[in-house]
Image 1: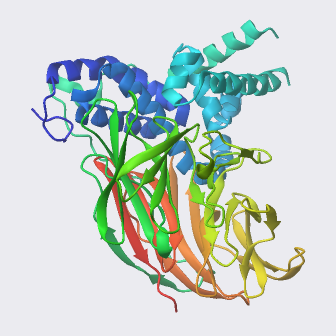
Image 2: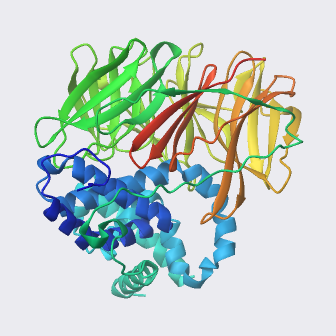
Image 3: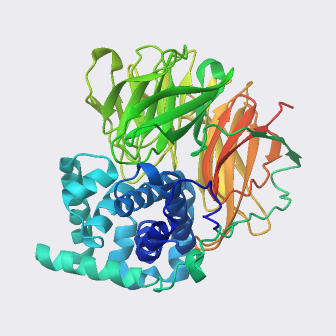
Length: 159
Length: 369
């Protein structure tokens, strides 16, 4: 069986495929909310599953692992592509008419860690502790990021 | 508006937007067979640009990958003016990651650490000037690892060092971590794990580069949309641009054009040069810049189209202290699936691209003409 074009290892292919089928669409949606780009979201999720496949033997909770990998992959891309995005965002916004959902525009415009906290909290329904684990920071940092993000979103909504 | 109302609206907005992705069968799991991912190529078109003068095609070298599984993740300035690259793999234990780096004599294991449940995802590396230690920032476990290169092991970790590029100040030994909106530093010598300096930036900015300028022994950062350079180590101060030829050179991009100015210590403009692209292209951003052999070397991103369907190309422009365009290098399309790191070090552009099966590192030699 071909396995994502990667090295064959001690992977329970049926279980791996089950995780893949169960989580794929949800993770693409999560990545899409973090990146605003469907093809990039699909790539990040594919990379995360590829990493899961490589490390299958050392992963206890595949679903949690792959979700964290997706979040980190999105953060990495966001940071590295920040320059291009900041340049192109205005033109893209005009072209797509994002003003139709000003609240999502505001979420997309948050600094990346604040955006991640908002998406994980209100789309994935994760607790502060879970978000802290996913983002590699303290729960207090999550609380602080969330507070700042909500203040900004409130400002946009009430304008 | 109550907090509950705001949260309800946020949830609704996110779910509405998430519905842009239809509930389809995962494409690679059809018929019970997992298939290799079809490559997604965001090809970049190339065309001649009149205003930026004749272009030189630079030599491209593909550098061997580091690491068994993860490949090269990070490339940055290395000790002695070279380049350091870094990969990461899982270790023997479930919660262990192994960092592998390369500079000078070739790949070596830099160290391993107990990373917890998460995968390794190094985002930045900063070696000390003598190369005896390196610092690795990893967003997966949220820490900066201090690695003794000779011993090949992690000797200390620092919390909340998860993002951005890094640099070690050769004078003080302090480590500076550049984040999206702030620069933070910590002192490895004190054994204190907490960050002690925070220099919040105004607004939403991104750190463009960090560099260690040997003569002035400091760490400098520049940000997108801001022509100034901030010295963040020692006595922090703001320079009006890159020091070059007894003055300072600075760049600013606006309305699809780049303006290069030569200014004095006070920021007074002594001369300027405007660069434009033609054929529908616009100069979008300065992705990296450095001073090399008495010239300002700028890595430019040009674009057409939108974020969803962009066409992007990149070139490097050498500018003399008297504001002449010396050379325009056409940088080849690396055909990576996504853009990763670009750094200018000495005579080369180092380009790290993400691919479906890992990362690929290119060295583009930009000879002095």
